[in-house]
Image (cartoon, rainbow, N blue to C red; front, side, top):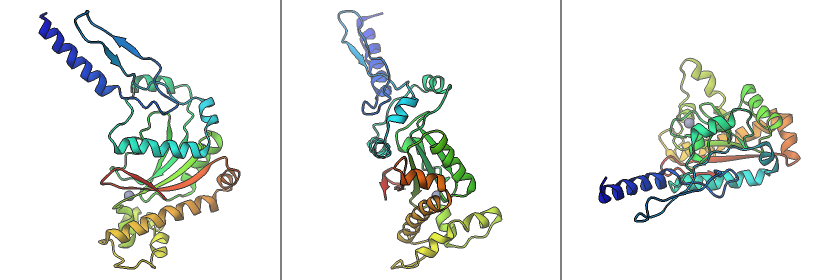
Length: 258
Ligand SMILES: [Zn+2]
């Protein structure tokens, strides 16, 4: 192997390592090892920033406060917006998560494929419980899932995540009737009714109105959680969990906390 070929190979290797190994040092879950590699004396030293391998432990979950979890999600979203997300060793995390799970939050999202929930908050395996239904409303099953996530499994935050240009919201505004979608939309229509004070054209073609309804729908969902789950209400009243709302911007990837 010639020196120039060797140097080129090393440069490519170093670039790949640096591209793939960005890690979030500000999470409690950073990877465990830092490795320094060097070739012969003529070559530069390459510092490898490790990929995250660890998953949340019971002790780490227990030590978190609801406000810390909220700040953690905000910071993760800022990294996502900057395209500066944590590199993860998914195979290692799959293995490390297999004995048990201690997620820090429950996220209720819409079905929309443009809202990849874990990615949006720069989270990985074992970090979040994610419930999804078009229009991010709650029913008995979603409430039961949330109660499991918080009361049984120790999550500290429930976040209801609406989003821009939501098709379910638009369908509710348009009073769409189609198969099981008809019944599903009745869960979203209270937000449409709540939004009749909107100053402007109240149609699915008006993005500002759709956003207004989507945000009211998030607020309605939070109110439903508090009204229909005495378990979660008690936990929230005691400060054991926080129930918050947020809105995802499809164009920027930013999550605005309501
Ligand atoms: Zn949606």
